[in-house]
Image (tube, rainbow, N blue to C red; front, side, top):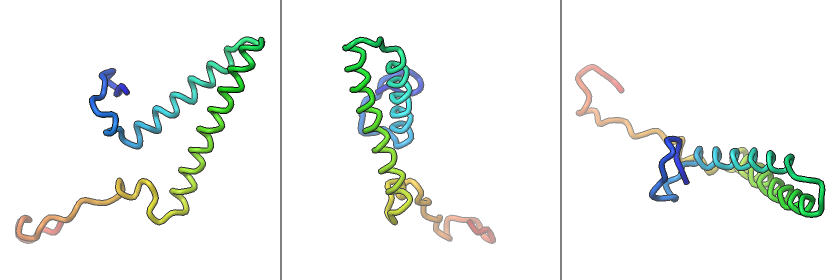
Length: 98
């Protein structure tokens, strides 16, 4: 996968949830553009059916993800929302609170 600067990523497992969502959205719009450009012949209709199936699958994944985030106490982004630990009191100057 490539990042925003156009370079290739070394480890595809380091993809953030935001990058994955952006790639999915780019894929959706590319599929939609291809769907609208297809000819109305047998091959075009077959490809439209395949693209429609792919679009429905992607839509289902998005709906499942949204449902899980809204109804699950331990949703998929909870780790991203954790705050870092507070500094130790001896590390802060006197009279200041973090």
